[in-house]
Length: 443
Image (cartoon, rainbow, N blue to C red):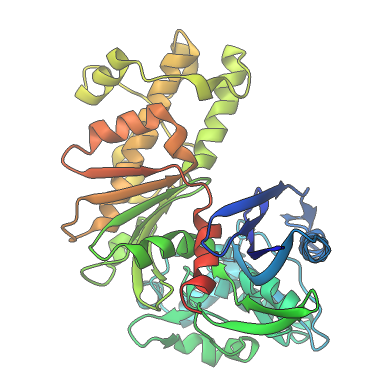
């Protein structure tokens, strides 16, 4: 007898993943692939939408032919801040523009002169992030590429576009809308007035709950197909469903995102300046979030350390905490000069790292320099945690993602967060599991 399965696509910036879960949400199969990036029409790097699309379709076709499995449900978790715009024929008219693409300065000035920055940032709970404010990608298209903008019937955030490939249903859902898009007016629980004034709302399809699904014929049988979910919100979903008392979640990876589903008040402008923002949860509720480029900064610095000390790229993975170094750094007896080079220079970052005395050639060996590097990242993590925590009183913190395997990082966190109850989850399927849960828990 074939095994009934829930199939999940979990599409990150680096790895594109495919999972099968049984009906009890036990993982029974996984596949990881990587695709080379391509260039958009401006010559800037972006994901290869055609390869992602072909891979997703081929993967499901292959699954349909496998007699070992019977597909019951299908859902999608992907990175956020990325639109795929489709025309009347349902085919893409834009690439997946990279959210790190520069936003034109003249357009920045034009937008914020029409919609004052401090006010709109607070109302939409979105710091000024250029293309990372995905709503501004549509504003940019309207102003700079009107011939493309006019071809757009619907703009779909990436999770909803991958779902659209299998359903033909164009929708939006809360976790993608509420992810620092600058689209959503949190106090009014509606699109912000600028979205209507600029006609952007006409490109956004109907809203449905994150838990919504469509019954479609796949593999010749009826399959429940979800509408997709933003990966950070998906990682949070399983905690929200299982845990009822207040908690904080640190989801680590390329970004470290600290999520507080129980905020006490609205965001202040100073919090926004420090890259603190709001998400919408699977229930459409406000989630306070702070984030920084944790994994990206570590990779950047490791390249420098590996080159200088002539070490293999994976050398750092076997480094254990050196208690003498740990105690010296935590107590302040050992002076550290670490200085981040890829983390946005917010007021908080400038306060934690006021001077750039970071000179890896001053260290006798890789391990010592590495301890200083990770101590700096752990200090940044704690500051990010406190931003998201705000006035909340909870001391319960869950930590998941890739950094739970970094023993030096975890040792420093334990030392810096005495009095907190830290629980580490060795569960790399967080966002995929959450996407599966959307179908299992509500259907």
